[in-house]
Length: 122
Length: 418
Image 1: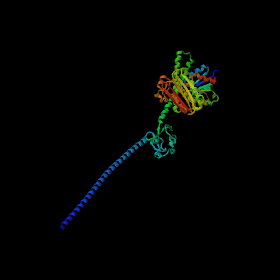
Image 2: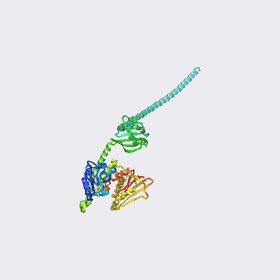
Image 3: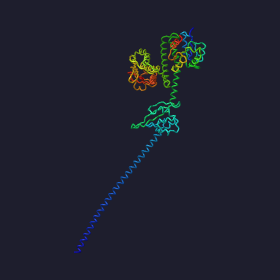
């Protein structure tokens, strides 16, 4: 059974690239384009890992994490943040909410994202 | 005979009388002459007196003129002081208010209290609630400073300067406080900074998308590409990286200006931090044919409080410049030493590069500064690196300065207290 990854990201080109890259690595990838859709899909597919953007329409990444913290079944799914900004305050808050890693989009290549994913779920 | 004798006697008598008359006449003449002389003297004295009187009148008139002039000048000066568009308070040598203008009254909402403030010592002004922030920034001794920003409330930001006042003879007369309302300027500045911040942030998403796409094509995740395609795509990738660098620099500058560039201070081994940045450049320096050296101190340096991420960025910018602006065959030498006597750690980044033209040296740390020779040499710089470096180093209580000679090289120094 391939490991399931959910990408919650609103920029089409970005999630498309990530999806391709992760599929090449053999993961099963689903997409959600905002936080609301993200929460629905988490409950539907129960992914092994979530790649989560912070600034999104409808519901942002922080709100998604806050809601997941209340759900016993889902609160332990590893989350890697993929965000535009990397302010220490934001990173600290994400870690408090259970994020495992934090990637700044402009600083990472898709290959490095793959490495971070592998580190979490193999 | 008798008759003769008698006549003789009469003659004698006449002679005596006439002699007496002559004598008296002489005395009279003498007296008259004396009187005339006295009169003459009196006349002369009168003239002198009259002259003195005129002179005195003239002097009095001059004094009156000078007094009027002084009065006019004084009125003019106090009118200028009173109507000056910036708040002015003049403290005398004893730190007592000697003048205060209406603008101060307006800025601090001091209704009809101006007269009562005159003569009061700065220590006694604490009774005026609205003046407390100002008194705090001035201090009881009223230290001299220039252009400090004082936030009274969100809609009132003042720029405060304290200027010592001396006469021509260098006699200390007191201190003049200048209060400039900079609320509008600060708000515009804030809006501009926010705009840059948002714009830069928004630009990062599409730039990331381009970066990731190009990387995947280059990694041949979407099928094989030929050599020519690879060459063009590599160049495109580099251009995009430059754009990302510029956007990141702009964001850092915006954060510095917003005051959000907070420092996370932790005791650190500065040698290690500097060495890690040094290693990042080794390959580039080698490729460029530079002699690239890091001179570590022999003894262990005391740890100092640093924000590793920020200080690494500052070192990165300084070393990046040294490597970029030094031609093949040149030398970049980074050294760190402990100046125990001055209780300082001194870092120097010396290159044998193009140098900074002397006429441009005072603008080196300005935003968007780039030397003309640097622009000819290298098109990539954003002109923000040194501005960012300076702000970081100063936020960490360090100092930064440089020595440079065009076509000879530049050495940047930073010193941190330890």
